[in-house]
Image (cartoon, one colour):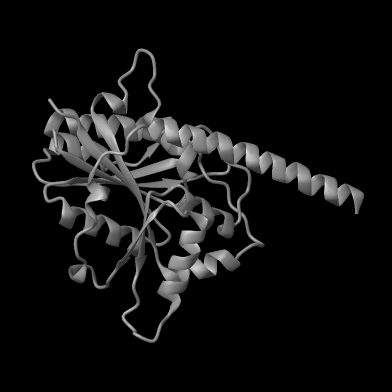
Amino acid sequence: MPKGLLSTVVGNTPAARGLVVDTLVRSSPGAVVLAASIHCRDTGYPVVQRFVTGPGLPQSVSQPMSRVATGDPVVILRQDLLAIRRTVRPSHVVLALSDELDLLPFLVELWRPRSGASALGDCYVPAPVAAGLDPAAFLAELGWVHRAARLWDGTDHTSPLTPAEIAARRVEAAHGVLVTASPSPTDRRTDGVAALARHLNPSATLVHVAQPPQMTGELPQQFLRPVPDALEKWRARLVFDRVFRSHLDSEIGSRVGTS
């Protein structure tokens, strides 16, 4: 039996994330949506809230997922996704994730095969990661450099990251970026944010989506096709990012030490 397609959706606001989910579901009728909110604490595992919706979902699957759980989000979400696939066998599942995750390392952990345990790759193939951007919120994020938060990276909390760093990482990890268009024809922020997203991730597919959601058209077909060798590419990008950041930190440290 063919494997299911698993899309991952993030967004810089709940509305932007929801708009991407709505657009995907419009383009893929019958898709099941698993939405997860990850609430990080100062220490220990995060609190995970999930909500699942879609055709053919029995209460035996949806009710346990509606409960709040404290634990490893990778383990919790993997179990949820495998339960959905084995019970309902949908051809397409959309995983909507909150903004308290460092997305790239989290996806590597989520898809990583484990000896003696079922892996997502046994049941799914990865679809492009889609990021929704609200232009006003994105520009505000880029200006916030004096406050920091720790995200969950799949195994532990990250070092403190500013909203600007979080915004950049979100775009860099995506295969496709959907920028919400302003209803005002004189508001040029959408074009400016699209240009910034293109600079951060030149290989991403950029799509302008209209509001309200019922006006949203269908996505380009590449959003509904598997990404070849996705896990290997995510791992390679993660290694590159870590080496680059380590080199940058060393360069900044040496300059500060000699100034």
